[in-house]
Figure 1: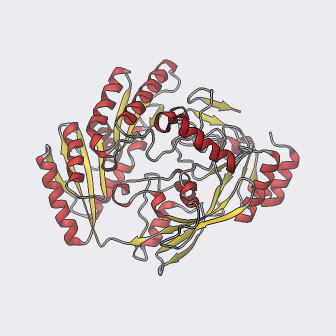
Figure 2: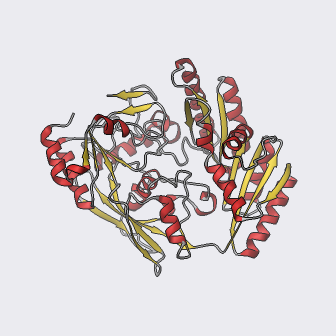
Figure 3: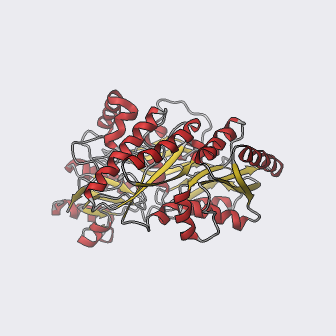
Length: 470
């Protein structure tokens, strides 16, 4: 519970309408999209500008009050849950697109800007912002930056990190700094921009971002390849990449996921096959046509029983939307849906998919697998019920084994969801104890009072998932 003096000072900074402390308000921001993590904040604060953010942080620094920067709450690693109470910082007022610079091919935006709205706004000018997380209809740019979000187009275009050119950041002591800018080259000192991207709100608060744009591709085509064998689908992924073709999108869905998504979207997805690959390419019309023909041939030579190209943009968009709805569709089946993102080198996709299936069978849990096969980022998704403690223990054991297998194959415990609180116990599998020590030293240097999103990334001795504070 915050002292009345602190609450009054918060009201003085942002106004009474922008400080919420009712039980209903606090409950609404006590969790994100991650199951089994919940903790009540002491207050919800919505600043209107960077100076107000700075004043809030100075106040919290002085009184050692935790701060959790939050976007739309689509986080899947419990990264925006207020596990140690304090303030949840909202950016509903800081949601403006500030500038589209067509001369330098950049867009400058506030952190609360909706991802899809930004994408659509720049496309109207013939420009392209490629990062496209599945949550983009509701996610915010600030959250994308904090988590270094990926998306379906990540194979060809990269992830959020590859498009962040400059940031305005409020540090944990309230100081305001700017990193990078509209420069193609800049090696003046440490690359602080990259350091803050993906730092999960543990080092500072992003209040403005300058993002790189590219020309909008003139042509795009989409096709669906059907497989009776999971390994054949995975092998096709490796063959496409080794053939020096980098498609815009190369997505994988197994049969259990297909059935659920088709029941949800009803667009005519094939549910009789074991797996499908959703493949897209963009670029010049001639190059796209050439690449699509070559990829179709590769799929057929590697076991695809059918390859169909979308005849219209409406058909293609239906396929993309169906893929993006996979998590929503699966979430309807059981009370608790746990979606992970173990990532391996592309060449290990087949072995990783096979291992996931074997691990699920071993631990007697239901796991559907889909994901960004082209960049090795798989999403094994477990359908369970957190009220069944015995089953949850088996789910935990299965995911730990999946993470270990991913690392064994040269991969990582997370490709785009972040560590947060959910995966903090597994971080050592990837970076080792020495790596964790280096990261912790950096955290301590920036945030000696540990007020910035505490309880995230670095493991504690508390239970792995269930955290409830009221």
